[in-house]
Each structure stands twice: as structure tokens, then as C-alpha cells.
Image (cartoon, rainbow, N blue to C red):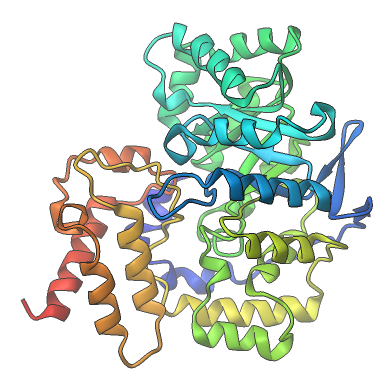
Length: 412
């Protein structure tokens, strides 16, 4: 999507009024099979809560906590979750193996395993088959239920065609190594339409749709294109990188005053539940409590009522007053010199929504806890991060903005 236009400098607050109107949904009748709500895809039931493996639990050293991950996968399966989503580069390339280890003891026909072809990493046509075979080995499986061409923007779409990705994946389908083929999209509605028109055998699409992106990031337009094409939609970033689970104090109070027993995250999921054509919603559940809260939300999942939608709109309006940088912490933007982009933006956003009197000191302390080599002023403005960012953020400029703010607060 054309994020250069809609999110200049990522100051979403300024565009809040634009996307808060015009959200009308048709509620669905949920299907419940002894656990979390499911939806029908072809002849199978798919859990509407998908287990996303981009933000797996880690230990103090930042390494995947395999024991905890296995426990969470077990709990997920026991609750009725049967859709598990990973990718070649997630968790520094360790996610696929971690999920393979966690899932290998279960009947392969009892769950849906999803991964993606990292077209942004291709350098020659032979890479496509090499990576696919490596994925089968990492995931310890003979086939993938759902397989995606990953993160399609203009550049990655050209790579897809250049390296004949689709013909290879069609071959894998004929060999039974892929059941259903789709793609994830990170660009304009116009490119989305082009991709759909180019290949008439897509079976689903993965889109970034949430309350913050519905208007400001042209999410509604993309949703309508997918619905017109009759493509089931997998939702990525339903919480906008945890932003919708961590609203500011004023917004949180609005929601808690209305329903003190509902988590902030549950409102975001239930907002999406009001849309037709949703296959599943991916959630990166780093902690067991995230998983438990989501299980509670998705058991007998209900869309927001008209009254709840009004309450949620009011809360989002309050939150947008302080939102600054639209980073989802996906970490695709790995910096060649080691700047910790996602952590810097997360700290800055938290500082902007913090209502405490000591918020300045807290921001400075947390920022200075980062390694000096990882701070914003170490950015060399090479621009590599901009080419990788699914949100099309001007990362070097935003890092410079954070650095200026930090130095101003420090008085240097």
C-alpha cells in the first residue's frame, strides 16, 4: 500500500478523524467445536485464532525458550487452535525449527501448518527450491497446509515473477507438498489488485487489517478488493504490533469503565470479528497469559455490538492523541550496523502515551539501557531498513527524530 502518502513520518494521530468513520460490519454466526471459534475453509474447520510464530517466548539471552514454547503449543492445541503460522526469517531464522519441534508429536492431520517463501531474499531461481526444501526439513513435515508468497510489495512482487516462484509452487501443489497457496500483501490496494489479476488460482490472501489501519492505511480498500475476489482473508497484525493491546491511560479507562472484565486486546479481535470472509487472525503470543486471554476471547467469539463499536471508537480517538510511530516491531528492518530500531520506536511510543509525572526520566533511563551501538544516533542513513519495512516508514528520519527528542530531554 502507498504508505509514503498515508503515514508520512508515521504520525498517525493526525489522521485519526479520517478513519474513525464509515466502519459498518455484518456480524457472523460463529462455529464452535468444543474450544475456540472456528471458520469453514473448503472442507476443514480452521480456528479463528491463529498461533503466530513471529514473537515466540525467549529467555534472558533472547533465544527461543523451547520448553515454554512447547507448553504453549500444547495448551493451544488443547483449546482447539489448529492454525500455526511461521516463516523462514522469523526469530532470526529459528522460528520454523522451533515450531517443527513443538508440533512433531501431534497427529499431522490434526493441525494446519503455514510458512512462506521469502522472495525478498532470493538471488537466483535455484534459491526457491533450496529454501522450500529447507523449510520442509526445519518444520519436520512432508507438506504445508497453507503456503504463502511472503510480504509482497512492488519489489518483492517483481522478484516473485523474476525467479518463477509461482510455477515452482504450483509444482509443489501437484506433488502434494502444498495444499493451499496464497500470499501476504504489504503495499497499495492497486498492487493488491494487480497480483490478484495476474494469477487466478490464489486460494487466500493475508492482509494487515486492524482498527488503526482501516482508513489511514487503506485497509478497508484492501479488504473490499479481497472480498470482491472471493478470497478468504488471514489477518496479520490484528493488534498492530501490540499497540492495540496497550492503549494509553485515557483510552484504557474508557474500555474498562464499560467492561472491566474485558482485556484491551479482546476489543481489537472482536472488532475484526465483525468482518465477513475472515479465515483466521494471527496473534504472536509471547507469554502464556497472552495465550490464555486470547483463548478466552475466541471461545464463543462475538463481534462488537453497535454500542461497543461506539465505545471502541471513542477509545481509539483518545489513543490517537498520543500515538507517534506506526512500528509493529516485526523486525524485518534488521540494521547492518546494529541499531535496535524496533526497541527504540517502542520506547518512544511508550514515552508519548505515558501519563506518569516521571515519564521523561523513565524514557531516558530505558533508552540509555540500550547499548550505545544500538541507539538512534548510530544510524548511518544507508536506507536499507526503508526497503524492508512493511509499513513503508521513513526509518532513518524517524530515528533522527527520536535522537533529537532524547538529546532535548537530556539538555545536550
